[in-house]
Image (cartoon, rainbow, N blue to C red):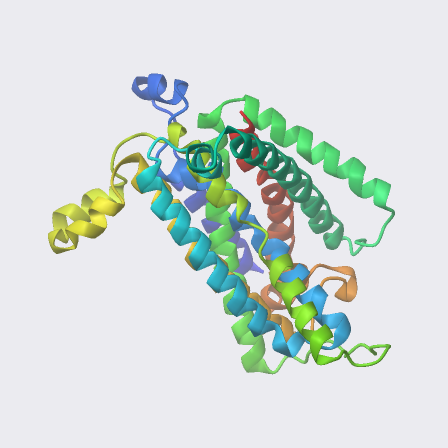
Length: 364
């Protein structure tokens, strides 16, 4: 148990040290609502970071009832390709619309005021849906801890409303405070996720058996039906594109200076001058956030899909979500792993609710 406690304490310490804090001499900058790279990752990236907790589960839920989970990597390939395409387009767009605006600005310039208005309304709907999905996903994760995912819908709505209200309160407290809290939580999430995946690798090496196979009712799907389910799975797994648009819209909240990694690169790797130019200034910070989206989505979806198939666990198995099941397996490879499991699940609840920050920031 002592190892698990030390890991958790160490993770909290690192998260506390990494979290940026507003300095008195910089108050006028934060007062204007400007943030750096870590702040941009926190406010505009938390939506796609936390899609890890539900996107792959939704994807596998579209395939598993039909016995098609072995084809899940086809859906992963579609998701990865879409991430690259959309991510690349938004990265390019920040060069054209350096003051931000995303799809709204592009539609307004190239398609006219009518199209721009339609896009603006759709984006508002998207942000509202992001708030709803994030809050309810946080509720699912909370109920997963107690293996009560299947309780009545009105409990989901009531709990989701409570989480949404808490996130809204944090938003109106200001970006400086929001950034400090969310960066700390994301740092803790990264550390514990790495520990979980190490535990899952250990579980594979130890030969931990998969969950008992469920009896599937109904006829096997035809080729056309299988392709339809794969397409559905791809769409369900591709749920965090809001972060790309949010970063473009929120570029005015980003300080117009080079990120530390760009400053370091200019000094130590001057031959990559074109790369550092691409990622320079406020637009460069936005592009770094959007680039992280491309690699993060492909990596986490692939890993979760592999271990989902390996251990035959999905949303609803043992009354838990997919990530809840994998966290239980991974952390329990450590002595006292239940401590890390509970910490991870509670962190997931807070982070999923916090993903609403991305939408709340852009709704402003």
